[in-house]
Image (cartoon, rainbow, N blue to C red; front, top):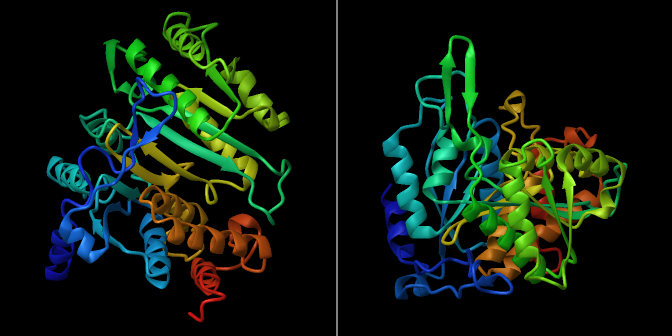
Length: 386
């Protein structure tokens, strides 16, 4: 504990409150701007970055252990401030939630596993996962779905981005029983948040050199709610004449993703649709175990698996695929301007996949999580004598 406290003290004030690379200027800039990182003098001398870690449920702790092992082997200058928040393991409370938020206020960056949400109702509708995202205002979820060279699927060479608004919609936790046996569940769509996520999507497309944004909706049925979302996207699209804009109804989008996913570039959508499309698209390139994800607010950045799944059936069996979490961790390092370490880890993971000799069960192999991690570590420094 003393060592952890010392590490936290050394990294305190590491990055200025303006943002540790969180997406800024959403209302004014033509492209997303990353605010320069400012370290304290202590952090400079230490040369380390503090990152909040939430292992989560299911195989989350095992995947975080894999990240720690790879980071250690790659000499990554990161100190993890680890917190455990879990409803299913009776490790969730307002106090623990506040501790995580306080840690995030200090670090600005987090690496998290899936915090499982129980389906039984115990007096609180909003899950701790949702409450954390609301407290940090993590309004934009980004999942980059890209084929991994060396692993063949029905559709190869895919490269598309799913951007999801994740603070309102059907996830507003506003439900009540209006009459016996009649439940009303409110879906909240606001102009401000619809414009914000639309602006984020077009800024992302501009910054990343993408050519098209598709707004996914169900405005033919939910004429007012999804109609407002669609209207906001259309208004924002007019500000970006160089980026092609089109719209697609959610059910048709699902079919088109399966039949011809190459037509898509950047997709932007409300909360529930994004949750479904994230998982569908992940299945196109190998499943939940290989797709990284990230969530942004104006101040914070959270890195996680793109298709959130606890893989409870794999707990303790040493069979989980660490690819998605390792790639998320590599993206986090890039976000921290640790380009060398980011590329080192991402390249090593992709090389293991490409060679194909070490594959976990979800990719048709028989290797363990430990086998995969060892192979990644073996590929970290092939030319540096490490």
